[in-house]
View 1: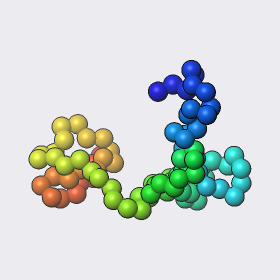
View 2 (view 1 turned 180 degrees about the vertical axis):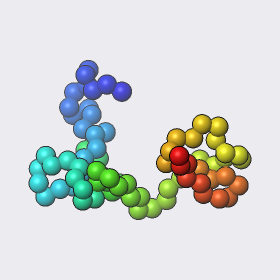
View 3 (view 1 turned 90 degrees about the vertical axis):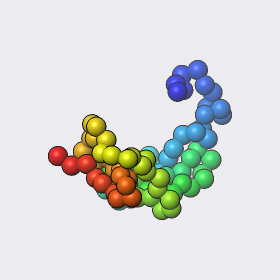
Length: 86
């Protein structure tokens, strides 16, 4: 989706932001909660090197190992959690 043809009042609810005591700080090494443009909090917390989910995390389930996993991919295979590594 492009914001080029949209007006601010039509798109700000869809934009994501982080809670910070410093305006315009963005992501740092400290985790911050992710909010939408209306200020509704999500279950996601992020930093420059971490993602935390407070709630349910749904992962795709496979019947066998994916053919081309990327390092760090998570998958449930036959009720077991796998993390792709090098």
